[in-house]
Length: 377
Image 1 (cartoon, rainbow, N blue to C red):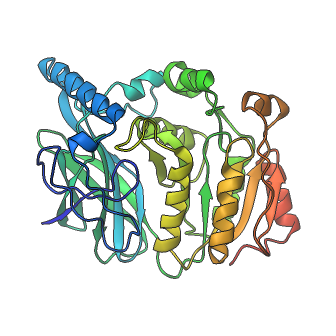
Image 2 (tube, rainbow, N blue to C red):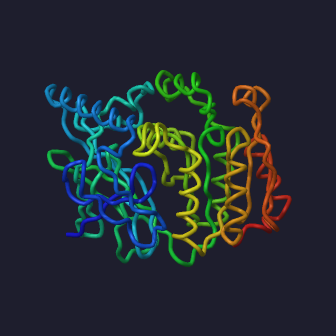
């Protein structure tokens, strides 16, 4: 049985092995990730992070007294012929399972009701072998399992002590693949107005998930690209919280978006700052994908209401060999007002085409008008 630690909550790649006290046991970062190891004692943790840890401990004590049970929520992930990235979350919940059924109407606050279990151990079974992984202080599992895998879908089974078994799918990308899609979620595939604090709170905690609106034409665009280039991977990269992953997955399924892993982040304090940086999460995720799949050219899809143009522009300049094109969905006038205006970014990067449109149909028209010449076969 192998043991693999997760990346740290703030994306700096510290791996923790075992269940030792919070003050020690931090191992070196996984070789080749390009991240620095984090060696922090409880005294070095940011005050906000220590307060959050105490709050989680208080909630855990109350939940255990009420008979709540541990559960592992396995998230769909991705991998290559030599590794699989395992994503999941360990929580306490009343039923011993966090995810409601696909056809249920769920208020947003229910996504945040489960109690995260910090630094707990879980087991992953893939390809007939079991591996031990450890959650971070937010209960998030983010681990890499090396091995030999074939193109297609690999079944992952995950559980922890006293929990049931949950399953997920790892999308294996082979070395022959040359094209893929990385898509933002908020205001790119779903109308959310996420950057606005009050609307964000309403959308995340109050609004019924079936009331969320898809962006017109984007599902058709992604489905068409997937049809023209079979087996092309699609990854959904967002600054949203991992708590919302089940709801977002159900939304994508209901609205006929191609299936693919969601790369989200953890809201709240990190060991070094009060709030995590959504922009840093996107930057580090893009850099990681460039390292893991140097042979793939990505179509980067985002919107002009957040920082997608700036982040994608930096990636284009740093990794032009990994970009096929950039497609930016332009917000409506009303959406732009709520978003605090449009970004001022413009197309960057030599010989990398940028396309702009108000919806999926306009972006598809531009891609077709250019003969998909920028997109590799």
